[in-house]
Length: 364
Ligand code: GDD
Ligand code: MG
Image (cartoon, rainbow, N blue to C red):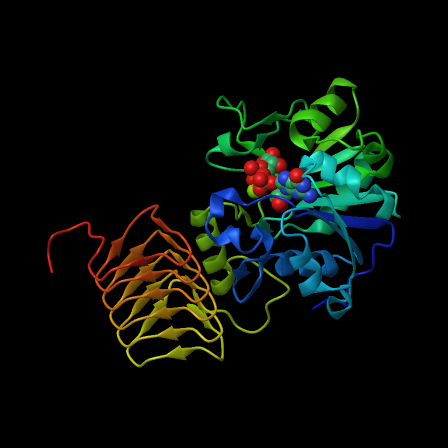
């Protein structure tokens, strides 16, 4: 859904980096690339593409590598979303900076807004572009504040908002301000990134630009922001979309405690709360309790089972009275009756756990 009220941005191209392997979301990312995992009923990337479109940007280039073909199969030329989408594939992953440099032949505009493909956000992209223009920056970075900056790029700025350092995943962050994974580049800066070899934008390009004294500015805001790269964040982000805490122009209609595909079957007495999503053809048994669960298409949750803050992969089955909490269940896995899978458990695709086969307690 593209907001017709917003003027177009003809002089801005968008690039989305979607070539990562998504290792922290394994085993789900063994079969699907992270940006294509279903999130509130849509591939995650669709929420980001809808935001790009709603900001008036039409031309989007996806930098793909791992499972590259899946993106084009789903989004095609982008016309159904009012976008013009092109694809550039790295046969060997070139890293974040190499991925940006690799799409250069497709770029047409003077300014290029680049996104990490796994960020769920509500930032006003027009405001980021405005900051880029009025600071006359070479690069403008969207920055957010987080509780623990160590898993991110830490980005201190001076009183004018000019970036003074870029410290990727430092154990000793000097500020809680981090790289939100969205940048506006002047196109000439992309032209200077070395071609044909892996380059990290975080570890090589940004420190290099700062050392050269280039104009790198931060755009800080307090909009919704979450990197969806871990199971905890994926589950939270999905629930926030369902409940309307996270915005997405790709979702219309009222939001509530759960989102159930019309082709799913929910038995009487099942409880679906906490931003639970149930995919197409999934079946939820009587008395099952789903709280913040992400149930992919075709999965089955049997009667009396409990699934909390967990992802249940395509066609997986959770047996009667099983308990799944803060866990990831791979596609087609079969969790037997009364099994207990708790914090951090990951069941690999197709693995079958016998009834009562994994327990954390001795009762029952
Ligand atoms: N095309 C391409 N090629 N894309 C890649 C490659 C590659 O070789 N490697 C990673 N990507 C994509 C991923 O698919 C993802 O969308 C994005 O680049 C960022 O990679 P992550 O692996 O998710 O990085 P991160 O979350 O550890 O850290 C990054 O994001 C943080 C914000 O979410 C960094 O940019 C941090 O500085 C930042 O704070
Ligand atoms: Mg990430």
